[in-house]
Length: 207
Image (cartoon, rainbow, N blue to C red):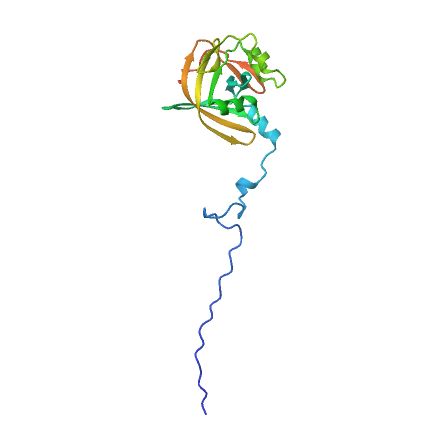
């Protein structure tokens, strides 16, 4: 008697899952994947601050109107964003009264200080100096409800366009509503100290 042989289907072996980090598809829920570029602790705060200290910038004072009077603080991180529409950006410390007033009122002023205004910059940077003493002896005028230093190198009054928090500071973007530019040389901040421009402007050419 001859036994019948039944064909047996081929068995396929499933491929072993690939080792290593799973590629990001954009659909992963937050926390489902470790990203070495974002999740590494990175350098310490001291090393980052040492880097930031080497950034040269103009010294500005941001002012706003608070419930109990004018408020202001010295800011070294302020820059232009756009010419059309005219936008400025100022970086304000989280928790500052000036930031609270800017967000509440929606209007603020940015002043570029002259190289002779170191004392004014230091006064507005001091955490122990009350607001009333910061403004004592300054020549100000009211522009769109905001105190403006009339003797600064240049100033602009801005309407708040956007406020976003990044780390321990907030980026405040304002649309320029009024502007004045005077003559003089700017006060600079570099390597944790006030500086002045030295020498004539450099030309683009070699000779």
